Image (cartoon, rainbow, N blue to C red; front, top):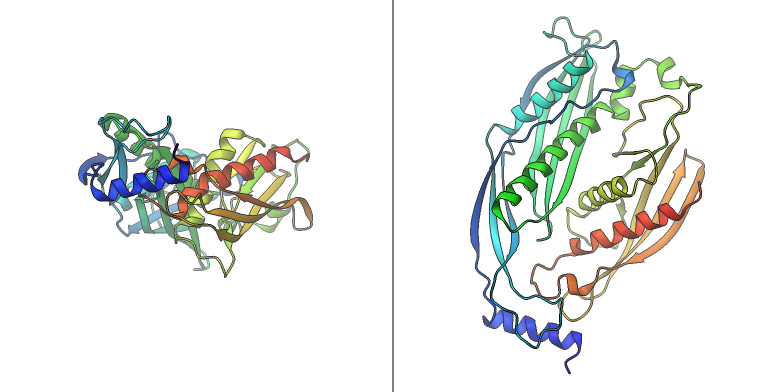
Length: 361
């Protein structure tokens, strides 16, 4: 009987020899991202007025590689659960409106719902300019749609002329769907979520708060109990470790998704987002990728990632400080040539969440 490694290597050889079809085909999806409801504005913006000026940048289309199943039967010698029947597809994603207009509209809608939108620049306390770097789907692995919004926003104090540049990031993942109508919905949902998270990442930014909130508000407290918050930060990567450029943001996205699903605390916040209610207990999750070891080719196992994770309360109180190692199940991708180090991200995120849930706070 063949070992699992032998099966995998044999499958790779058969694949490369043409025994298993791998048709590169194309699908086109037209989507129109928007906020299903405005992002609620934080308390520190109350009493301030903002005018959203021009928006620049255009990232309105994406081409990503995904994989769909095909119906030809597997060879009889393959064990249950191993599937070679997949084909590559190039999916073109086109926004029906200009990406910069979509983002500006979402920001205006949220400020308007909170009562902070000014009808014109002359009467506003602050003006905001949006410089969009990216909004669309980024290529990750064949298992998900990975949406990403990156933008810089310039906040100008109309009284002093001081300009504060704020970076905002919004990301989301949704499971890959084979059927086109479900794929369309999943792509739309990913983009909608990334848009909402990007707007929230700006509105709740610590840098925005320091620019517009008086010192008394920054230091104020509250007698009422406030919900606990975990703020997720992008993990650092040690200088000796070589990983794909997208690794930090992709891991950050999976940590947000899995923490929101597990709900170890009341609120899961993005990087550098501040708590809305004074007195909120804020726990900061951060980490460093220390090592990436192992082979990538099929039949040789999966590459293991070693990370040091820290969960702290304030600058001086450490709740969790631990080195962990994780790797995905090799059978989740052993039959497919889409081999990159992003495959290890979901397994690492699962391990981090497990450690956090085990902590007694």
